[in-house]
Structure formats: structure tokens, C-alpha cells
Amino acid sequence: GAVVSQHPSRVICKSGTSVKIECRSLDFQATTMFWYRQFPKQSLMLMATSNEGSKATYEQGVEKDKFLINHASLTLSTLTVTSAHPEDSSFYICSARDDRAQNSPLHFGNGTRLTVT
Amino acid sequence: GDSVTQMEGPVTLSEEAFLTINCTYTATGYPSLFWYVQYPGEGLQLLLKATKADDKGSNKGFEATYRKETTSFHLEKGSVQVSDSAVYFCALSDLGGGADGLTFGKGTHLIIQP
Image 1 (cartoon, chains in turn red, orange):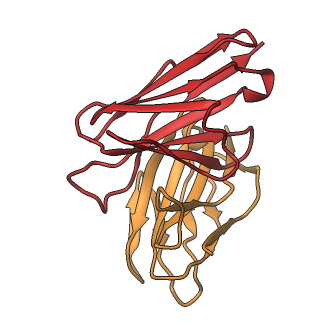
Image 2 (tube, helix red, strand yellow; image 1 turned 180 degrees about the vertical axis):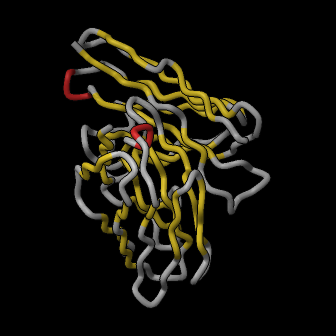
């Protein structure tokens, strides 16, 4: 089945540094990918829609300068958390939909646990 | 707007017990319904889905029936295993959903004890 690979699975960084998280669709092309944030024991919160070849669309309340999204190819989207602070510590998950099947369910990555010290 | 309501957890059961996790929804249109499962430290996996009324989705011994009259999509399993311990999310896909087309419930943490 369709696989979405997310890397790294865990990252620890110091406050003030930037962290890049990659989301790849391994066996399908995805013009659109999505980034979520999940707090402990909470549901997923959609942060932004990543669009190949154009700017990302951010949900209300999400700082676009803080969470930089680049969708450079049909199989790769990256989320960069800039100038990270401890409050950015969270579980970040990406998802993608196969371009060949727009009505198919989303495929999710395994998430990235970010800890900012 | 759309919304999904799930029973709050954690739900703790013994191995081989019968499982029901309730899910009800409100939607502006005629949604598709999903159950996703999240194992510890992982992302979400699609468990099952149903796209129209009276459809039954099933996978790995889990079942859920799309009940339009009661706007429900309860998840059931006849005999749970320790390996079923996870967080289960009910979700719908509709025109009234988010940019990703999905509206998630808050999740139900299921704990199965041996």
C-alpha cells in the first residue's frame, strides 16, 4: 500500500535553533501534503497545507514565519521549525493523498517527536 | 460546521473482552466516515472506512457500520488483544471539513490488559 515516510522520528534541539522535518511519499506522487501538530492526549491539529510548486496555506493562528513549509517536488515536503522554543515541543505528523486517487483516504507518516531544550 | 464526538477514554478492558467505542457526527453534507488507529509513538493508520449509509467497514477484526439515521459510526471488536492497545480516532470527510477534508474526533485511548 501507499507509504509516507517521515524523518526524523525523534529530534532534540536547543532553544533558538531550527529543525527540518521531511515528509516523503514513497510510491506515489502527492501534489498536496498536510502538516499536523498533536499535543499529548489530543487530536491532530491541522497546521498547514503544503502545495507543490506554490506557497503553503496556513491555518488560522499558525505562524508561517515560524513553521516554514517547502514542497519542492511531488514526493517531498519539508517543515522547518525556525528559532525553536520549548513550547514548540510536540509531535508533528504529515499526510499525503495519492494524486491518482483524489477520493482516497489520506496516508499518514509515523510522526516526528520534537523536543526543544 | 462538521464535528465528530467520541467517547472519552481511557477505555481499559481485559484481553478477549468485547469492545465498543462510540462515535457520532454532525455534517453539512453526506460524509464518508473513517476510523484511524495510532499506536504508541507512531502516526495514524487507516483502520476502516464506510462511504454510504448502511455500509460496514471491517479490518483486523474491527467493524463499524455507517448509521445515517443515528449519525453514528461505532467501532466494535468481538475479542480484543493486548496488541490492540492504541488511540482510535473517528473521522469524517465532507465538504464542510478542513483543508485536508477531514474532521477528527478527539481520540479514544484503549488499554487492553492481559
